[in-house]
Length: 131
Image (cartoon, rainbow, N blue to C red; front, side, top):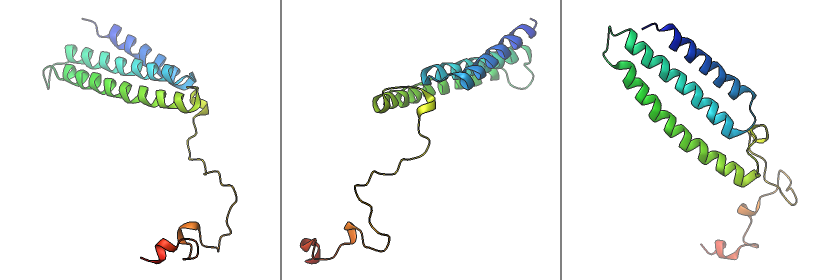
């Protein structure tokens, strides 16, 4: 068997997956592009296993099986995150996902030197003063 054809096919699949991850805005399409990249890696592992059997027999097939399990777990967690994102934002575009936490909206900020409501004296919370 000539291993050039599967290697070129895997390279094309991987390149298409990288393009999909870098250019797509929809989170579901990004997950599909990651799956394309993982399938390209599986194709390389199985092709290398059939052409090079020097060190470990069926080693590439075993690693491909691990990659399939990893892809299934990635899709499960990824889709859960996408569904939660859709519930919170009503969109699944990756550009609108905040990467940092937003500060809590406060009605009126307190001065830096004054004690907050958790450290208030016994005048505000008499039940804590009895303890």
